[in-house]
Length: 246
Ligand code: BGC
Image (cartoon, rainbow, N blue to C red; front, top):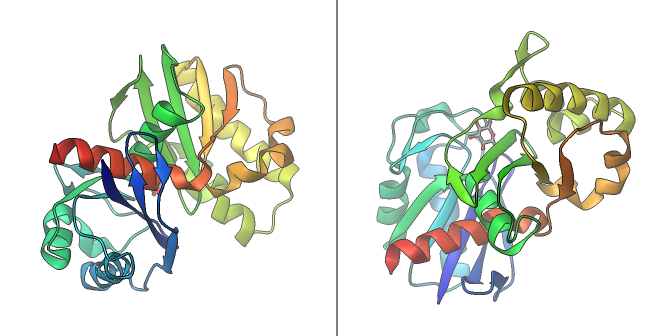
């Protein structure tokens, strides 16, 4: 079975058609810059554009950077605040005319990593952290997702962790890998103190460059880079939407 996976992020909206049995992309991966402001109307337009470019009809799975409660956004840190309390699934379904499932973006990426990536076959406690514009997280126990964890919003340095240690902060403040890693260490120290996961998987675009910063990380748990890199969100969202459509 196939489904269209879309990853709505703070800086880009990416999409591709996915073979949900193998987790492989079977179309090119398209990217549209996230519109500013990223209002429901503007984001819907970008999603419609992606669907048209890929000439897609069928289930659509969307990862969205917010707490998602049965399709409804309950937060908005890296997306326009006008999304809060909006049924994202309904908005996108209406705009595209296709059935849409919406989940948190990091949860979608985590699901893909557990099925086809670095977490494949892993039991026990696993935390997937996606590093990008924000810091996203997905918790798994024996492969089952505990949704809507928001580790990027742990308190750190008088603010939230993602404003101190995200990938965007590294770029914007022009931090060296070493200095940025020190910040990540403070974040992961809190995560480990609270949750003691057996395995931590680091995803997001920066996981491609893991050899630059993994040597500086001081983490007790087993640590792995995401295998599916920043395609994980697309793949996971597509898989979940295909299951719902089934
Ligand atoms: C949001 C999360 C999201 C993460 C990564 C955070 O700001 O609160 O829901 O998963 O960014 O996009």
